[in-house]
Length: 278
Image (cartoon, rainbow, N blue to C red; front, side):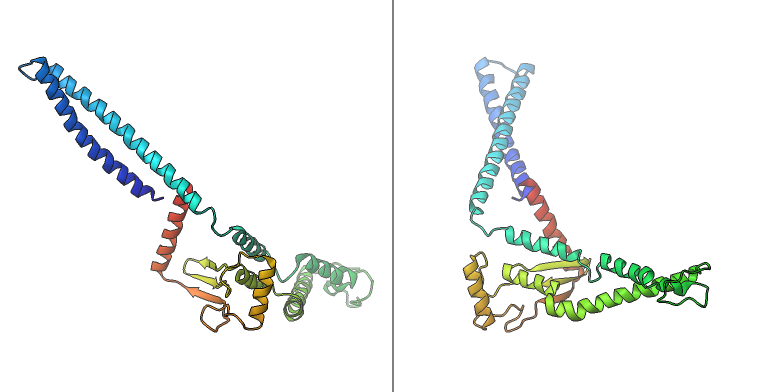
């Protein structure tokens, strides 16, 4: 529903009907003037003309308001009936929820990170390296009899933090991501199965695009048809998931220009205004 267009049409209708109403008021006043036998146009005649104008314009305002309201109600109900059998929105909700969970995922687990840091510092006594004594063994349980140098403690803490983080990152990248699961690849597969493409802008003119078009067309199907479609795709009996024909590339880096950004913001403004009105 275009609000500006509806408002403009209502004003045009009100202006046109008001002009016709003024002519009608003049005709009614002239008839009354002729029947009353008055010779000149006096104050009662002018007052009668003004009263006719006010009455007719009030009627016009009522008719225009009622007509616009009735038209909006009918169009709204018709649109709801037309959209009653459209595609379900739950696929979009599910993909958006997975994307939000993916944004909070980190390759380095903070809990494990702090646990291993404390294990190395307190359990293995690596903090003894920061002691000023020269006879303190690293892996012994001897306590430091002198004070710890703050600069030494900073160096030891930094090395252990960096080392545990690097080990965790390498373990996840080399083993877990390759053997167990890759969350980004899983999200891309989810988009393809759900037939949903994702348009991401991390800056005003830079972003990413995930092409989630399903090669099977419809994805609002039951579990049996989903398994059949995946089996056909596995055996190369259907098209590819890529943006181009016979291509599997689904992830793209975007660099947009100013005109594209303006059109993007215009579409979003119209979408928000339309949803607020509805």
